[in-house]
Length: 595
Image 1 (tube, rainbow, N blue to C red):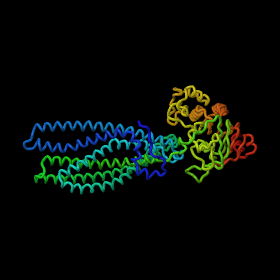
Image 2 (image 1 turned 90 degrees about the horizontal axis):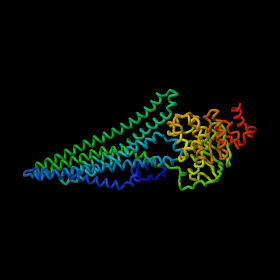
Image 3 (image 1 turned 180 degrees about the vertical axis):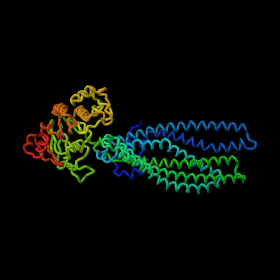
């Protein structure tokens, strides 16, 4: 497989450029295979020319081998030549098909890789409005359509264009009268074809989008199937899905009807043209203006031209469908990447200790610019300090972690790690120094071992086990049938919430980060395991800069600094005892929990 090459992806307008150069955008993926494709094209041209020569061969056989005073030996030789020509056609068709299909498979694999690579470089906010099912439809269904077009439709189109052009030339050379017929028939066919093709392209794009809606709805309902069952909403889920299916059906039927109109029109015009050609040719034969062989060749080429036109009309529908798929893929590849993923940006300088500072940071989510989530936030976490953030839900605590990880850029202010502004760094090098334990632990559909080693795939078995022991996960893992090789199921469905949380903690500890982010890391644990893990975390946090979001004040009483937040603002900072004595909001939180 060739090295992945991507088209220009810095464009901000993703609609018109995609339409204007949908197929052209895939040239970087095709160029690595240009040598093999050139060989396939040479074979295709040779096969097409050989097929065109059959008409003159037929005329020769009819006139010289079957006419009055025909030569039987010449007939035998001509038949052998025709068989040899047929063998050449068969071998050529095999080579052409084998080469083109091999290239098409590899090009589509490269495109799928490029799409996924590009998705990993998009900003997090883009995924807030994107639908996973629609993205999957573009990666799978749309690329499959392109593969079919590249492997079959385009080749057939080129072949039939050659046969059409060659056949027209030979028809006209056979009879000058045909030039008049061709001059009249071709525009009558082509002009409506172009008009219908434009409408078919729009209908094909709409049909592909509706199929993407079906995939998105199915993915959403199935990923939340437990919630659907819990609220007995199976019927409603089916109705929502069937509505999307019906919309896709109507869009598909609209596309099919347009193709049917196009096909019917072409068939009518082709048969009419062939009839006119036969009529003129028959009258010339009766008048003695042409021989029987010439008439046979004439009919052969007329049939070849008619067949080519009919085939091209069918292939035109497939090309329009592929155009819609190509536009959707190109639109995705032209989404603007997160510039902080650029390798041209400097990396975070390695330091023994890292300080984290928020300086006058304000932030609003891209989808809600008018709502301030964080306002004028200032704090500094010194090396090996434990900083806790407390407050009501919606106070903006988790948003701080999102900003520090570079999921979003501050609207105002700046964030410093080790004294360096992370907006001017390759954000991936910053994340290498951070370990995250989210409130909702994410699991991948693989083994426990691979889930723990996700941040360090090269970790040894002993290192993985040591991290699991620190997270109080080794005990329950050992009790499972396959131990660390137990499959967790999709999104960790085979594990309890507490088990997933402990694996997430082990995953973060295995990375051995200088900065540890704990977002309600023990929220899914019972009191016994919470105490075990909290003791382990306290030991681990002594050597790290630790930022902790906590709803349970009991887990952060020993923090070096507690930041009390409300509606995105810092209300107060201090130790547990100082806040308990002076801050009413913290007092209220403590009263509700400790009482």
